[in-house]
Length: 227
Ligand code: OAD
Image (cartoon, rainbow, N blue to C red):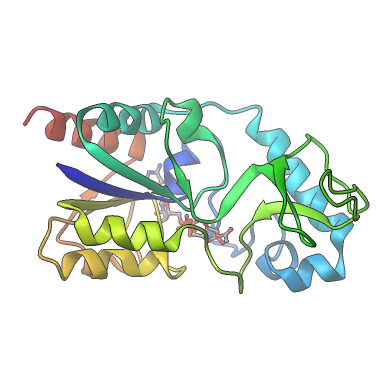
């Protein structure tokens, strides 16, 4: 069976990483416009680097949870395309070999001048030179608001050929990812939503599986691998 799964911050919440849309509307005490937009970075590169340096340090302190491990098992049984909006590497550390990071990766650095990418050092600074072109134009390899998500052709193609689409732990607020369920459901395939609560686009799914991802995802995967 061909399966496409989209994950969001909710799958990493039980590992100890904060989700984006907590009730106060802030991301780890910062306004999204300040730390997740090109304009915010142009205004205050030191602050933005510091913010992602902290996120990278936090990542080193947490571990994948049973939901990440379950998706690695799913890939061994079915033809899985795993798409994540998360910039953490918990899917990889949970055993998933191929992960499409549509919003970039905390562990990667990007040169804004020449587009070269390389493994991010633990601490990045605005005047770090790019290892390829030497310009001090390095930034986290994160897709900020107003920028185009990565690998979209591959993702739409996977959705067009999937027999099943599931979204796990995402609030359905950020497009294009929030449009995947409607796109897949129009093709008449099964589209479960796995979430703790209703999302902004719950009605686009064929059904909902409600509960914490560390419990619902292993159960859901077991139900698929048993068939
Ligand atoms: P959000 O923080 O918007 O939503 C997290 C979702 O996870 C919510 O729907 C919660 O109900 C759900 N959730 C929380 N804990 C859960 C648990 N233990 N089990 C299951 N579900 C749980 O995060 P995203 O939808 O991923 O973009 O956010 C999308 C994008 O907005 C992010 O990729 C990021 C952000 O700004 C960029 O960085 C470009």
